[in-house]
Image (cartoon, rainbow, N blue to C red; front, side, top):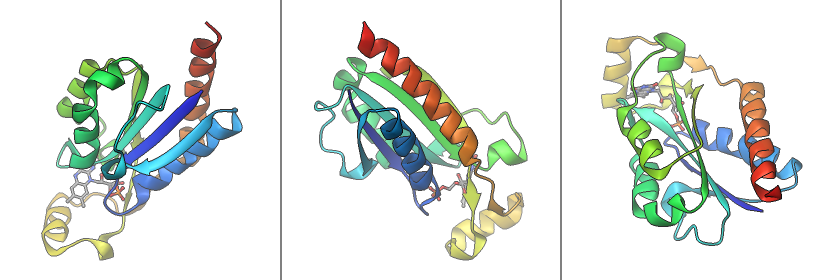
Length: 165
Ligand SMILES: Cc1cc2nc3c(=O)[nH]c(=O)nc-3n(C[C@H](O)[C@H](O)[C@H](O)COP(=O)(O)O)c2cc1C
């Protein structure tokens, strides 16, 4: 079974989460490609697609949401999993991700998982720094790669079940 893991990431932390998902799926025996969402030209080669994005202002990165929208018809015929990375899970769990949830519904995603992300204040641009100073979320790396691996293992188990049918 061929799997694509594609991520929308501005500062790289979500891309790294995608790499951990990909290596877990590879260890489970899948053939896995990893791409930035903006580089994906087609999904037709794949049986399953995992799309992840960093969350900014409650929205997915545009390249990740466009990947889902632009390839909606092909994705609906495939197994799709989604994940979102953000600080809201650290600060105030419960932020609605209406756009991503709607995409998950429209595409028939089997799961939409949220993971805590990472915030490196020094790398932000001036506008982002102003937002972060106002919101004052904790700064640092809150990613839990063992939780990511566990989730990816569950995805692998589901995909193995699908492949066996
Ligand atoms: C300006 C700004 C806005 C953000 N807005 C949200 C948000 O609405 N919800 C959330 O959960 N995280 C938010 N975050 C946190 C990012 O999603 C988090 O830092 C993420 O891990 C960044 O991923 P990346 O390194 O792949 O770009 C925001 C971060 C910045 C800098």
